[in-house]
Image (cartoon, rainbow over all chains, first blue to last red; front, side):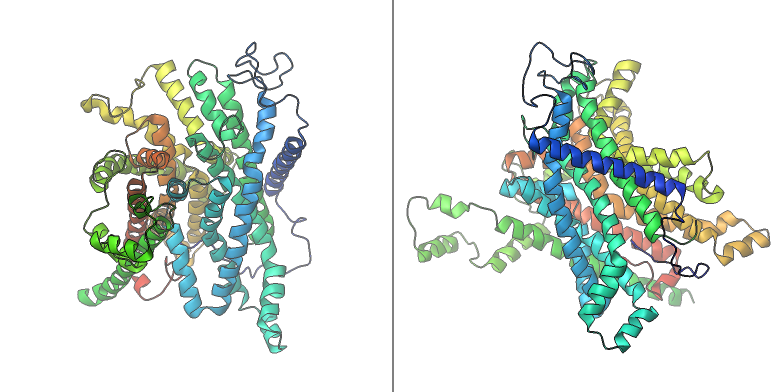
Length: 297
Length: 328
């Protein structure tokens, strides 16, 4: 399936007007909401690292089990061991933050290199890269991760290497598509005629000037995917283990009480997952609408 | 005439078939390398405490009929795979292949059903949005598709179980396996709907279908059809809906299989996903390896089918290299 098609828009000549000025309200709203989520994640991560928390996230109090939000100073209530949910939600951002950045860095760097090679060189290199992309795409991510967990018993950082590698094909085909499109342009031709070396053209004129928005967008959406994978794994009992909180194992731990009508301990982390992933997706799509997809609409 | 129309199609399909075989070979190599790099070696266990020399190790391998080189081991292993011998599960002691076939059917049922659910949700939203443009009526639905895609599917499963079984009392809270057979399909509806909603692809499916359909609706031949009063729908269906639908479904199979791992866990569904989870828990190498191979084969089969549909619907595809899984 083609992932990316750049449509030449003849009706709209290239202008110096900032894309932000002509952006649609809906796209701006998406980006705004996404930025709020990013800020919230960053702040939570810093708060968690410096342990500026309302309560100790691992402090157990049997007097106050599964308390509803707002009771006795616990803003978001407590879980089945009486631990403060807000503090645990904040600390749980650590479960995916750094590992997620590792995964995204791997997919962006490797994907850009492969995509640039395939898009600029074409020919045999392109066939090889396409083969690699199709090969990696053949595995369901979760199954591949479970295979690696079964064989190597690894921790979250090694899992995130797998996540990073499985994220390479999307980036590679996006970059390759973009370069194949840009190569027909006059300014690249002019750069060739001027005798600029290939690495300058690729690195500066193509990647730096024209692929940066694409990569930022991909990184945002990638973060959403990483959170989904990390929470799914810790829900399944792999990755981060109790008592260290992760949004996934918090949902899992609250599950038994869910069916007794105590929804909150498992719903709070689920909502955190929902709003965060939604934020990263909307940020990516909003940026895409503003910076990349400037045809039509 | 008929033959000349058929020939290029056959050519394209045989090329696709060869590519699928080549990719599956690569898949098997990846799985083998992962297993090859696994720490711990049965021989070190066998020869434990004997401080064997290199020659002694090679001798034991030879005596057991095991190739000493890595490629020798790979081809021996591949030959077994091709004969359907996936090894014996460490946990159950049963042949892995038979077990996968047994549980694979219920996973296939779950995933195919949930794909249908995803399409049933996404197609109307995409149709309305691309034909009418963004209206106050369909915009909330598009947003809803985003929200649904971000929902963690495990929590969605709990909510569904609670609402349906506790509040409405419709579905008894038992797994499909223990249900009476004549009503088993009824119990399976809930996990299918949950996976269809929560596999995280709804918003992407909506967006892709909407973009493709809008693109086709703006084509000249649709304008011509409209001008001469012919059915726009009949002209737009193939290019605008059928092909994009098969493309997006084929490319989302890995996600849906991944989602099945979680949904099967939530609903205690006796499928491949649960088997994969159990195998990862118990370090049951043969089982998880077999599942990875079968899952990759399913993914490749899906995209092969997509190409078949594409070529069948659009014979021009044999002449031009448009929209190919390989060319692009």
